[in-house]
Amino acid sequence: MKMKLEGSYTALITPFNDKYEIDEEGYRQNIDFQIGNGTNGLLPVGTTGESATMTHDEHKRIMDIAVDQANGKIPVLTGAGSNNTLESLDLCKHAENTGADAVLIVVPYYNKPTQEGLYQHYKKIAESIEIPVVVYNIPSRTGVNMTPETLLRLAEIDNIIGVKEASGDINQMMKIIKAAPNDFSVMSGDDGLTLPLMALGGRGVVSVVSNIVPDKVAKMCDLLLGNKIEEAIGIFDLSTPDNLPLQLAKFIYLYQNNNIINHTSLYLSAYNPVPAVRGFHPGNWNRGWSHIFKYSLNLCSIRGSSASTVMLRIFFS
Image 1 (spheres, rainbow, N blue to C red):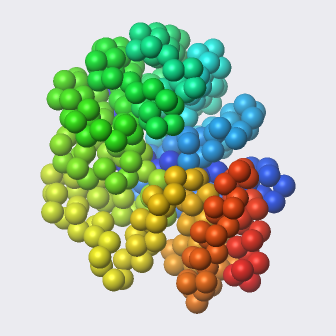
Image 2: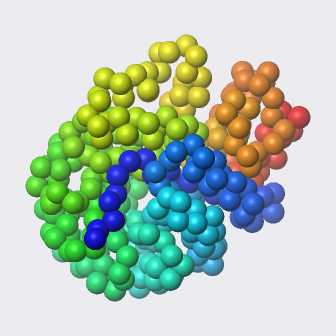
């Protein structure tokens, strides 16, 4: 029986300590926070998890922690992509051996492969492992768009079960939904397009915002899967004065930088506690938010949130 890919999967941030090492305890606590707040699945070591800044050993260690901490409570769809097919296969086989439920494979970046090259890359990976494969199409980062025609060819391979679609092209997404097999899931790769995509037949989202408000994103997806569109719209109504977490979350998309979501997660611990974060006080909203943006943009070349965590602790102490 194929894995059913739907609902809200959180693209987990990766916390680092002030020695630039993975904060394993914090990572486990964040996973508990996600499970406790109803997220449907986890995506470790994706773009938001800063896989591009990790060694292979770190990448594999994050997979191990996520699978161990989730402990079968919710599915783990782990990032395992590369522009090198053999490197991706190594990560996929580790994911399979450690017990991940599925792997997310990004379209090979920088190389700019042909559509046939993309097909052969995914076909080789899918035929080499037994766990499901999910395609990740994000041309703004990879430099190449996987066309609907290529994706629909891949959808015919038994263990390629879906796509995280972040092309930004709703017409392309509609074409895929219309022509794909019924058990092939089209997931939004952009929080801002989740509602319209699911209204057209998409099955969920791999969400960044759910790092902050997993309960709200999961509830919205649940309503949309039940065709309760008007109720779902109400969840993300940013004009509601007391909807403070979502009003802040929308600023994430002003700057396409992982530090923004890391800092927002840290900052919102004062409002909706994230167990891995300590020492923040609700009285510092305005001062804190300005510092988050100031130092987020200055630290975009620094791995993870280690340096920013230190700065925020100074400002909020």
